[in-house]
Length: 336
Image (cartoon, rainbow, N blue to C red; front, top):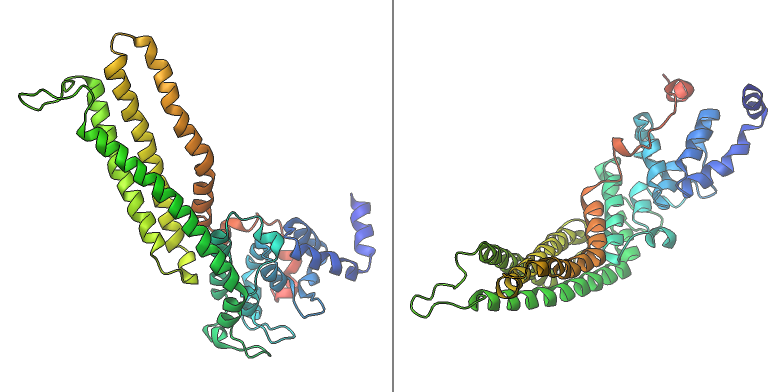
């Protein structure tokens, strides 16, 4: 190991410049980490357009490399004012559309736009407020660059959210119709003299009543959320949290209403047909669980993607990839 390390150190350090910059573009934080341990001056490397490692990480949406370099706060004062050959600051670069291979990793145009907005908001934290109004050689501010680059993605995101909301609102409407009718015509009917349900004293009837009420209230909530989403103003800032949050709550409410409806239906079958045939309880429960399982299989992955993208940040001290860089290796560079 010592011989190999000595051999590496005897090489021309510029040998690592190309792989170092390429690793920044490909989000290969392990490679960046390893090269910085061998050759700390690599952090000064730039490509032909004048982009250094954190600028390349921003352009190519390499969050692992970004977090790795961001963890060394001593360098942030330089990044705040750094510009490339086209006079673009960090916000201009964050305003560019991400490479297609990065966008394809994210589900749906709305979440793709949300990720782009998250990058812009993150870069805003490290630049000075004056950078938001600076212009490049094309006389474009960072906001103008972001709007131009993402105008098609905004339209696609709006269509994606409307499609999801329309489909789910139809499902919620059907559930409301079914459970409302079931609440009026209770299983077994009512006594003509008093109007009290025939199975009022049965435990299964209590299960039916509670689950039917839960299904009605949750499906109504889901319908209202989806309708508010359809009538919302689809500004690009809304994709950051407001619109995804409505979808998350609406899908959760729809899942609850579907599950509660099937429980109510199972309780009804038990009251009407299975009271003296307990063996029928198992197939009834199995059949009632089937649509719930199908819903979870189809929609839960989308709910997880929405939740992770909205509430779990890919930036910050917990996402610095547990860097193994030794501060002593870079002491001379930071003036420590």
